[in-house]
Image 1 (spheres, rainbow, N blue to C red):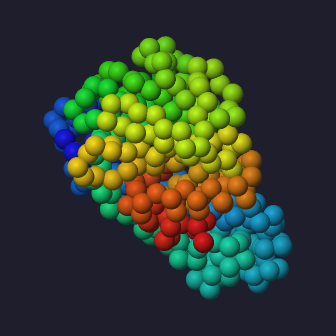
Image 2 (image 1 turned 90 degrees about the vertical axis):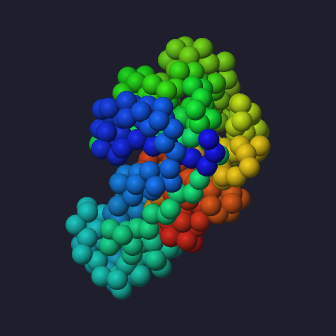
Length: 319
């Protein structure tokens, strides 16, 4: 089946109970609809709210609440209230903050109004199983991607561990052909060796420069093929010193687009924290979003699916 998504119901996938069973029923029934994908993107909460974006942007700019207040005329108290999710900022204040922090004004105002645009997700020539797992106070995403109707798939990131994966694993998938990690953090890579052992995986890839057992280094422009899938690595340090994004295509398919597994480079409405390098994260964010076709679906490490076109237009960190 071409041009499809297989996505579970939101509530179960968020709490990690029953998501796998529902997902398996979708897959066995051959449900691969754009409508189902759209329902999931509009239901899954954004990873970051206004306060998170302001906090990340202030860290990137090296500004405190007092120094930002001095630049913008917005009081430090109102800035701190916004960071603490008690925002009553006016549109004029948001515009001043966006200018001072080099943020996309439209996207920042949309976040403040809890109306950040979430796009229609177009068809893909393969099926995608988002595995959404509770971690700490949030949710982390891993993804299975494979030919619709097949029991084989490729796994991108492995969550915090095998127990978390098991809670959301679709019973339709019984074989893992390869594993690709975006970066080495406990919430994204915790289950790597257990997945390798359980499924007898012989191809497990980590970003070049990362150190992890059970994984082989993969760098910029390297391509791997598994069944109909072609996977290209992009080296994208910034959030971490060693971080990859992966573009997934099915070159032989007659229709359908591509998918970018973005890890913690970009989220719908935000970006990862620049814990290694703010400047490298900013540069790679622009580079990768500019390289892929606009309709490319983005499967981020946290939050809902989005598209390259949507984030180029609205993401606060893309200016």
